[in-house]
Image (cartoon, rainbow, N blue to C red; front, side):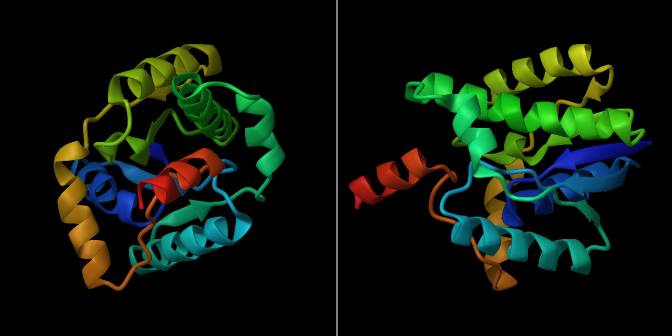
Length: 176
């Protein structure tokens, strides 16, 4: 069965891709991330992802970078709401792409991160699935996070230091 895997970066794709393929899924990736700031960071993550996709023979779909889609979706929200709106936007676009391109199922590599609210992502994915008419495949990939990032470093893959948005960059810088 075909599954569309929303991807946020190369390192976070490694483990979910392995698991989904082991489970017999035909995986294609959808790199939709208008939240990533600045655009140079988006390009670094996209490049690392494409390097991985090419090495793994993973078909990749990458819409044009459009930061205003993210800005409109989060519209001056507080952190918790901002993150949920960001996940909602990215999963909605993934589900829409899945429906239009005959993928019966979609999922996300966001489910690998111990830094994300996996329950909120699951709930958002399930609601969007009902609205979009495609299934959301929930898998808790977090057990593979460290292993995937270790592999990414061994491959010399770019690994980011913050979630992606302007606010998470500022939070990361303020911790230093």
